[in-house]
Structure formats: C-alpha cells, structure tokens
Image (cartoon, rainbow, N blue to C red):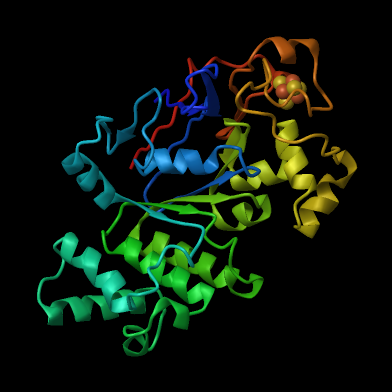
Length: 334
Ligand code: SF4
C-alpha cells in the first residue's frame, strides 16, 4: 500500500544535484488466485519496476505490501526473502539470458528442487524434473532433460524458465513480457501454457505487456500504466470496448487488433510526443503534454480515481475529480 519507487541518478558524482527517477507512483493493484491481471503500457512506463517490487527484487522507496492478508515486512533479511520467493516467482522477458549456457536442463531444474527441499535423491530429482518438463509440454521429457540451452528454440527455453518458476509451487507468477522476444508463431503457445497453468494450479498471474490486444485475450482484468502511474483499470473487456482514459484510447488506436482499430478509428488520437522524463515528470496529470483533451486543471492537479462502475475506474478529470489515493498503492492479495 502506498508503494513508490524512486531511483537515484548521478549517484557517483558528488557535485551533481540530487535527482531521482520517479519510476512508480500512484499504482494500485490486487492479484487473486486463478486470475490473470494484465499490466499494460509503453516501455519505460514502470511496469517492470512494479513486478520487481512485487518479486522483492527491488525495495520500494515507500509504502507497504500485503500478501495473504498479512503486511509484509520490507526488510531484506535472507530468510524472509527466501520464504516470500517460494510464493512469488517471476518469468523474465529474455529466455536466452535466463538460462546458463554451460548447464543442461536437468541442472537448471534440479538445483531449485534441491534448494526448496522438494527432492533429495538423484532418482527423486529426475522424476520431478521429468514431471516438470511434462507440465510445460516439453515432450518427450526424456529427450529434453540432457539438452543444453543452445540446443533449444526460444519457445522451448521459455518453457524451461516457466518450469523452473513452477518448482517453488508459487501462488503468484509475475510474467514480464514473456513472449515479446519469441517468434510470432510460438507466442500463442506460450500464452496458452501460462493460461493453462493459471487455471490448473490456481495461480495468481500478473501478465506484463506493451500489447493491449494480447491483454484482452489473456487477462480477466487490465491495468494501464503511463509514466509511472496506473491511470485506468477494470475488466479487460470493458477497458477494450469502452476505454475512458485518453491514454488507453491512444494505446488502443495503435493496437494491431483489427477490430479494436476499426472500433476506435473514429476517435483515433495523435501519438504526440513520448513518455516524459521521470526525473522531472510533468505537473498535474502526467499525460497532459500529450493529451488532446487537456484542460487548465490538468496541469495543476493530479486527478484522483473516479469509479465508473462494474469495477472500472480511471484517473482523469474528464470523468470528475476522483478520490485522492493518498499516494501510491500496490496491494498483492492472494
Ligand atoms: Fe487528459 Fe486531463 Fe484526463 Fe490527463 S486529466 S488524461 S490531461 S483530460
């Protein structure tokens, strides 16, 4: 709750003024078992920073987090981090960099199995490694267990990375652009695998993507991020069919989904400008330099959250002044 993440810049230069990248501010989200939530936005919008805070890779600058109805102590004691990471695992964007090229697949999966105490003898380890490979549809598993990463395709490596995340039997899976570096032809297979695991294992899934069209296909709920802030959220169908925030409308007008382009074409917004510098973010609504509907108030005040009904909400003065959230909030509830 009230989480923020600021990164210092020019840390090594004692003469430089103290400055910070305001990477995440005013972000609220909840994850639920067996439920997929998409976090959508352009590069640099803060999506990965949120995931890394949820995975406890980054310490938040401020705020608190809740997990299974308990406040998490944001200390970095190794025992508390280890126990938390059993529950919350991350799948990274780059399946090529996430596996060590000098070790085979047995090694990549047996090591966490031993660390988490799920298997001890060689026989037990091999049985579980084979079971994991079957769960991610790398079959026949006996053929994959001895292979090295360079002998696998990008999609197969991402399946190994997912299998490795499953070793911990996580309740939460944070998938950071899991298909963006893969061939288009195999993206759907990996997305379907994640969906199947979410349903079968009742995993809470955070799916990070810059592609709002795939969010619609993949997630029950969608959150839209712009310049470090979550600006709109709600059921994915509703966000796609009736986007309210001008930035969501802009994202949809640029989406490769032909139907959404057709539907939103009339209201197509010009993609003016880029995400602003987060060292000195724009005052008021951070989207105002790009927004075709900007009003004087937008430069002066930060819009609060306006509830639009049916779980749909947005932070935009076009729909009212909203309710201030008293800072940034990231809530993980499982
Ligand atoms: Fe545009 Fe103002 Fe809404 Fe921001 S608050 S999106 S500038 S209309």
